[in-house]
Length: 253
Length: 317
Image 1 (tube, chains in turn brown, green):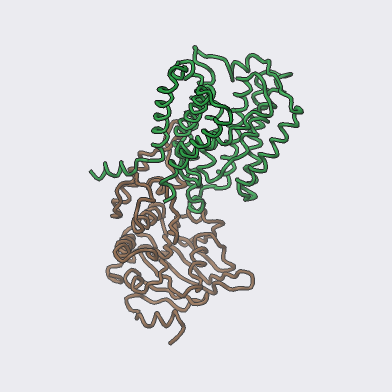
Image 2 (cartoon, rainbow over the protein chains, first blue to last red):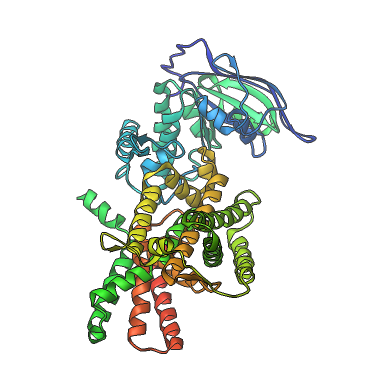
C-alpha cells in the first residue's frame, strides 16, 4: 500500500524541522534532528524506548521549546509558546492515552474545549455538534452506535477512532499520532490502520510513532530512525529493508 | 431497534434511583402518616420551603463534585454569610446586607478555590480546614449570640414573603435550579466543568483552563452557601452560628442520591433538587412519626446509607 499513488502535489513542506536540539539540564534528549513533512505524507518515527520520539512530538506540538534549531510551518518560522498555540496553527496530537473524557458523549469529546454555541444566549449547540460529529465519524468510517454514545461504552478501537477523528477534524496541517494501536487487538488495529491511511486523502501531513515495524511498513511513506536522541537516518519505505531498519534502531549491524 | 437498546442501556440507573426512592418514600409516608397530616397541602408546601436552603447548597455542590472537587465548608459559609448579612442589615439597607452576605460567601469560596486550583491542594483537606476555620469565625463574630433581622424587606424577600401568592422560598428554589441546570447542561462552562472532573488531562490538552474551572466551582459553592445563609436568616428572621451546621450530611446525600458522581464528570442539578426534597420528606416524615431526635438521627443515617449505596452501586464497576 505504501509508496504507490502518493501525490506529492505540494513542493512546500508543511512542517520543516532543522537542526533541532533539546537538552534537559545537561542531558541531551534530541540532537541535530532535521525532517521535512509534506501534505499527504505519512512519516513514521521509530526507535527504541528512550530514543527521544516522545520528546520530539512534544517539541512539535508546543509542549517543549527546543534548545536550539528551527521549526517552520508552511515555510514560515514558527515557535509555539504552548500546546494551544500549536493547536491554533493546525497541529493536532493523538495522545497515547487518547485524552478523552470517558463519561461524556462522543460529540462533546469531539468538540472538547471548542464547543459550538448558538445565539442569542450563547448556549451550547448540541444538535449541531451531534450532527457534525456524526458526519465526521461516518466520513472516516468509524463505526459507533451514535454520536451521543458515551465514550466509556465504546471499545478500544472505537475510542481510538474518535481520538483520530477529533484530531483530523481540527488539524489543518499536521497530525501527530503517538502509538495509535498500542492498546488494540488485531482486528481493531487493522481498522485503525485503514483509518490512518485514509487521512492521506485529506492532504494532511502525518507523523506517527509506532513500535510495530509491520505497521510502519504498511502505513508510512518514509521512516525516520532515532537512537538515543540521535537521528540515524531517513529511508523511503518502498525502498527500505526491514533488517536495515532494525539494525538502525538497535545499532547492531 | 439497536437505537432503542442503546437508549435503554444509556438510561441512567443512578438518575433513576432518586425518582424511585422519592416515590417509594412518598407513598410510604402518605399511607402511614395520612392521619398525621403528611399529605396536607400545608405540610407538603412546608417540606418544599424547608428544603430551599439545602437545595441551593446542593446545586453548588453538583458543580464542585462534577469538576472532581468537594466542598465541606459550605455549612460554615452559611453561618458566616447569614451573620454578616444580619449585622450589616442593622445599620444599612437591604441591598447592602444582601451584597455583604453573598459577597462573603463568594469570597470564602474564592479562598478555597485559590488554594485548590493554584496551590494544588486537595479540596477535601482545604475545605475540611476552612470548615473548622469559618465555624470558629462564625462563633466569634457575635460571641455566640444570635442576631435578629428586623429588615422587613429582607425577611420578605428571603423568607416569608410571597409574590402573586407564591412563597418566595419556592421562587428562589425554582429560579436557582433553573439557572443551575442551564449553566450545567447548556453552557461551555458546564461542559468544561464536566470535562475537568472526568479527565483533567484531556481537558487541559484540549485547551480548557482547568485551574480556572476549579476556582469557579469553589466560588459557586461559596455563593450558593451564601444565598442559603440569606434564606435561613430571612425565614428565621435571625442569624446564628448554628445555621448550616447540620446540613453537610443532608446536602452531600441529596447530591449523591440525585445522580452526581463523587469522583467527577457526571451529575444532575434536577437530580440534586429531587434528592434534596427526598431528604426533606424524610425529615418531615420522621418528625410526624413522633420519633425521638436520637431515633430520627439513626433512621435518617440508615436511610441515607441505603440510598447512597444503591445509587453508587453500578458506578463502582
